[in-house]
Amino acid sequence: MRVLALAVLLLGAWPLAAWAQVKVGAVVPLTGRYGAGGAQVRAGYEIGVEHVNAAGGVAVGGKKMRIELALLDDESDATKTVSRLETLAAQGVVAYLGGFGSDLHAAAASVAEKNRTPYLGVAFALHKVHQQGFRYLFSPFWKSPDIGHATRGLFRTLPAAARPKSVAIFQEKTDWGREMAAAWTEAGKAAGYQVVVHGEYAPGAKDFSDLILKARSANADAVFALPTPPDGMTMVKQMKELGYSPKLAMLIRAPDPPIWSKNLGKDGDFVVLGPGWHFGFKAPGVKELNDAHQKKIGRPADPIVGPAYACIQILAAAITRGGSLDRDTIRDAIAATDMTSVIGPVKFRPDGTGVVQAVFVQWINGKQQLVWPKESATAPLAYPAPPFAKR
Image (cartoon, rainbow, N blue to C red):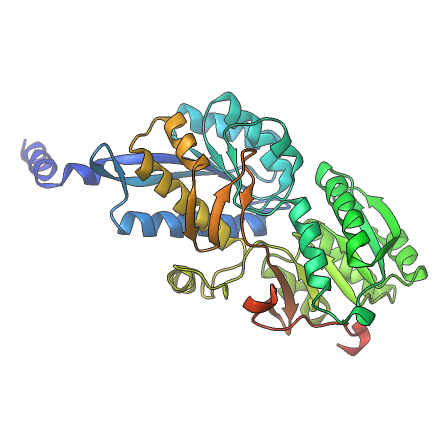
């Protein structure tokens, strides 16, 4: 009886708002081939929720409510992405947050549409998924056409005579691989380079020697690819073993996590990546995010942490503006987003793609440096890359 009385007393003394929760579901690859990237996504979501709740949560119907994040691991398996999202739907989440990797997001988008639940996702550049008429899919992250356009901008920071003139594309046999190869090929018309090698490989391949030897034989100045982290590390190791040192290696996705430099050391330097953000980016809230990440993990925020954190900012602002937990109201409020986040200004096009700042980052002396756009750079683009033997 005393225990029951104490519980009643505590419930009566505790503000009702403290018990109110807005349940948001996230499916993120914490294990498997995307595990290193998924860890960054998770950190961004968790720190974002902590900051929103510390500031009082979101306003719904005149009441302040805390965000409750339900996060499940899909093990980098698209089939499990689908089943985990359905599990979260049964728990009554009002919005979905995505994981890491275009194939996982592509699988998730259909579930979000079926369940009429708004979905925010970063760390995927696949444009094709946004061309299927999905109304509930939103991504404050650049897409393949944006990367192709930005590649031209990056090249223009170099003297015309020094720019790469020949490029080898190592194309992953996926929808995104095909899409990005087409974008890079098209970009060459304006950037002044020619694709001299265009070869394919299956995800999870162990031997890239045929592609590398063809690129070496063609004397390709640059290599463009979008491997998973394990594939990318294998690719670089074999490039060194086979004596192929391109002036520029642009590897999207693989070099995003810190494990890149830990595993490759100096061999991982000079690689350019397109993670969508950098902790040196100048925008409101970046310092607070970096401080929280430093306290939590021991270093400034990793590159995918920023876009993931921005998803929480966008969702919290949309719920507050809509003033409702109705999924369609939240969806419409996200679509109308026009705000500044840790990744800078954010808007959405009718197809759910984000109008966001494009950035390129480069590994230099074991650290990720922001190298483009030039006016925001923390270091100039290191080009040409020295041969592996001289690093």
